[in-house]
Length: 237
Image (cartoon, rainbow, N blue to C red; front, side):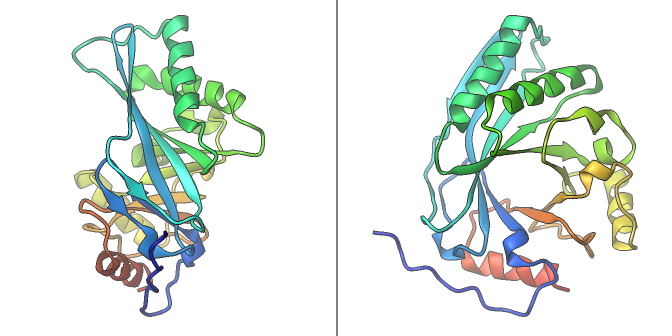
């Protein structure tokens, strides 16, 4: 039996709750308390690319959600820095197939790819996105996370076949703080296709967010009603 949903109290927020998504990464999480007003982005599994190999790890810890909550299925892809990426046609096809297998869950309303690449590996990310897009039903949305620099000073994501790009405004270093200040002053990302989503963290909330986009929130600690209430208030300042 599902636990009773706990109402979140607090001041009105600038970002509608229907536009807030809570990331549930690889640890035990129970997000039923958040209720149907918040979407949940659940890590479905991870893929490690090492040399010519493709290794898949499914989610190891439970993520409890209610039937009323809208779920985004997240697939994390990473490259083993000890083994140069080959990226042969066989490895590319295997990576796309594994992602589609992890995404094959009727509870996932949409799919998000979390794949950080170096400049020399950009084509691998674009190949993955094109392959996954081709393998998903037309009505299923495809999202991707992005380093803030990809949206601010680079243009290569213009060809990404996604419905949403989520630049992450946390763990960015000194240059990232300059970008956060510019956004707080009313600026925006140079890449227009990066203006429909944004990622923030509970421990480093931005002073102000650009308007009109969905906000994904990362918490370095397990989610709780108190943590959610606090970040919702921060976003509403």
